Length: 338
Image (cartoon, rainbow, N blue to C red):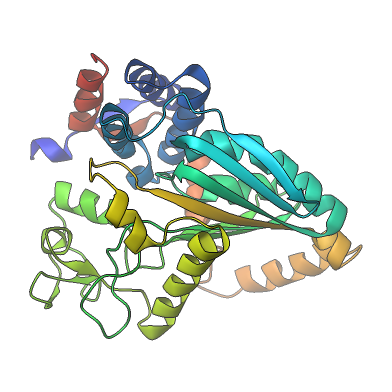
């Protein structure tokens, strides 16, 4: 067994605490460190390891390089009753989301649909925490963000898009909401780096090597290669939509612009995030939940079908310690020495 594959047991609380302590030592204040550590520990709790502790070194590197403001104080601006903008003050996104989502939910409940944009921020986490938070208000939610060019448009060999994740949630009062979070690339960059670390291969169709040839070796994709969009030209079109929503509508960097200004310190690039909250109660009217549950009941009675995010929510039910990469934990402990 290689050192990279050895794991150790940690409780969710321990994961939160080690993350928070490391972030504070390296430049975060209490509010930002707590928001990020909550996001990281939630990812580990739910089995989304590529967005858990794996991200802490990148957070640290981007603070040590001076790129990100670890003591950011995001400011919320009400542009119209249905349009909210949060200026992240050059910090990470979790605290901006924490401040903005309650106001987004309030607007959607009053008007029926509302949008929130986040600018001047650095997104380095999964997207499902924010759309699930929207669903907790009995609202449907959508969120998307761009990154740096690592994904090629369909038919091309030059990257233009980020992995450009898209998340959608549907509320199910009294039940776990339906929440999905997916890269519009064939595989997220974090999952590719995990595959490299653990010596795994990836399915053919994930990406191309530096010479433009299809490969199952994740290292050849991350070292000079490119990722393919999922679903060919259909996924490519959705990648493009995410660019336009999270950069064009938001007024922040497109992926190619983020690459031009980023210092490549291993952390996130500056960009924006676009969110929508929708009230089924106001738009569909009374009975929306009963009607929607008929759909979920029909779906789950089909053999082999399952709800997106179901595995993540099943993982959440366990209070057992999580198995985390031991070498990564040692790295975080070393980073915590300052």
